[in-house]
Length: 150
Image (cartoon, rainbow, N blue to C red; front, side, top):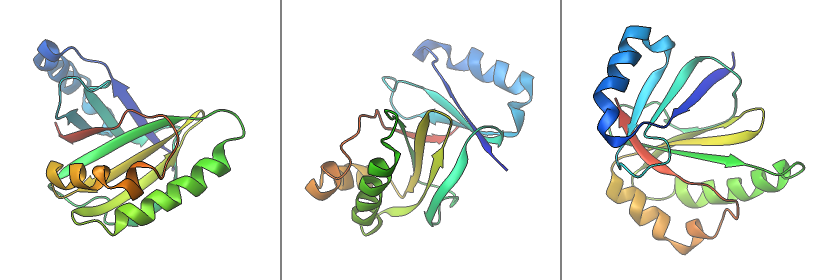
């Protein structure tokens, strides 16, 4: 069954009203994540329920509780899918061996890919992303952010 992935742009001072509206709407059967940093492009992201995203690949334990969740969206030019998937597999090989990496799931939507990874802590993510073999492995633009369940 396809999954929904819905990002929300919420101003830093509007968390309480957004969360109240989310709760009133019943949460749509999705799990809501809140960005750790106020400057994240999307301060909240909902994953779950019925949607347009198919799982392309799973690795490790993507649904383990605790830690932090990295969410990274890639909008690709037409015809770039195979090049992206090859580069992403290289980066996954570099990430999977890093301390603190717990698992991940890659989704393909109508016009983008979304990578959702689970880590033991923000420190482990920072160390992994600083490694040259990780930083240089995926030459596609994205704005990754770290999240925790809201």
